[in-house]
Length: 95
Image (cartoon, rainbow, N blue to C red; front, side, top):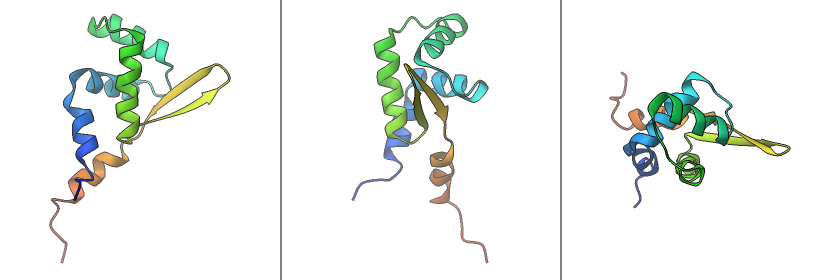
């Protein structure tokens, strides 16, 4: 049996992916170029666009990020729904 939260834990385990989520939490709806620029300026991360795109793919697979295309641009949005599901497994039932 696979752990339904495994993808989320894997996604959150990487510090670069957590920084991407931080940036989307601060300013949602960014393009890949914007995310790369903010990571370089604010966090001194010199990752390539391809590397950041691969990190975004992991975040999308985990359900933490969604994307929508408008013309040539793809906008990325934070989705915190999977985080709420993680804590549900350890909550005690209310009486």
